[in-house]
Length: 274
Image 1 (tube, rainbow, N blue to C red):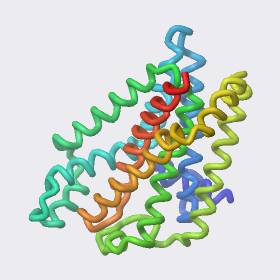
Image 2 (image 1 turned 45 degrees about the horizontal axis):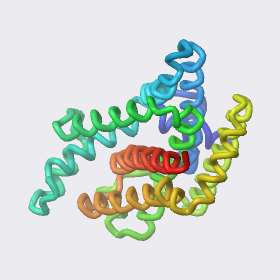
Image 3 (image 1 turned 45 degrees about the vertical axis):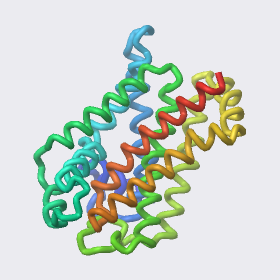
């Protein structure tokens, strides 16, 4: 288990930790849980050091701290994907070689910059909404990352372009059953951890009161969770078919897309209950 955690940490955070040479591909699927824990720590630090009138900024500091520690891991994927699709502009006449060379280009293009600006502006707007406490955002962090990996597993086993020679991702060497178990463990432990944090912060009463109403309302659940996940899956499928590959950049773009869509859905769902 220790090697799995170290493998996931070294993969997502690029830190030279002990036993990093003992790489276990399955450990990558603990990434959602590890990143959620880092987000909780960073946002908690912000909550402690910020004055009371600026406490809501702790949500934004959590995202910033996580992005810095991961080296903007998923944001880089979003930017590279935007630039690659921007080069082709969904024109089938553009060669796949040009699209994939753009993935590997370290420079940022117009489409990449625009995507990053819109993504961080969305995060800023969400951070100013009192609905999105560090606890809620930590759950979104977990769900968006687990969704991306889960979709990657599904597409790799069922969509032929995902297994092309252009695909360069760790899923090629991962036993799917083992990876699914790790994803489920990450989600279960993450929800339990966030509930424990909420209880410690004396916010469990609000969480219980509203979460039951939230999940029992099928329309709200559809808008807040199922619709964002379905939209992300459709977008990722279109990108896989256009690029004829499934790589880390596309999954990073799926993480960012799922995060924004889930938070938008939650905001709309909770607003309908107020």
